[in-house]
Image (tube, rainbow, N blue to C red; front, side):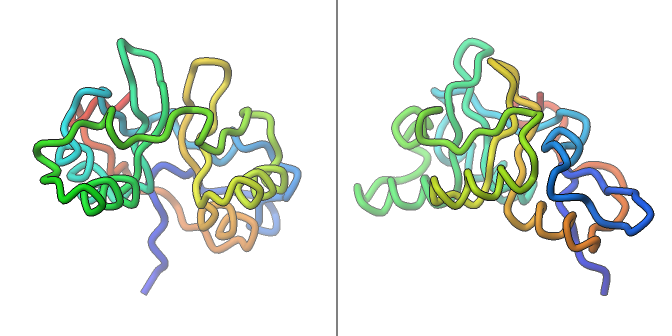
Length: 166
């Protein structure tokens, strides 16, 4: 069976079929779409977006500005440690603020992005310029691109207006 690749990552086309390690992150991020939630949404709402759209993390916004990210691990850890129902908790209680999220400038090379993720012990990296998020890349996205095993993107798995796809 063909390998499934997240829809938020663009397929690379080069003569070798491989991305180069010095290629900029912006080249792998697709159309700039990403899933987001407001900081006062419930943890349940965020978890449903993460599960239904198979994304590694969701960007957290407050009044239209991105302030961090949240993953299923963040939600499960928060709820389990507190014995809390995800429908009762809010994203603002469990998300990682920008300072605790791996971030790459759009011009950052793929090899630099890998180093950032390793240094920050993260499996995904938010590609952002100043206050504008372009997308999210995972270590798997980068590895597949560098190995040339990415496949053509057919549509998108982003939810129109579900969580605010931006």
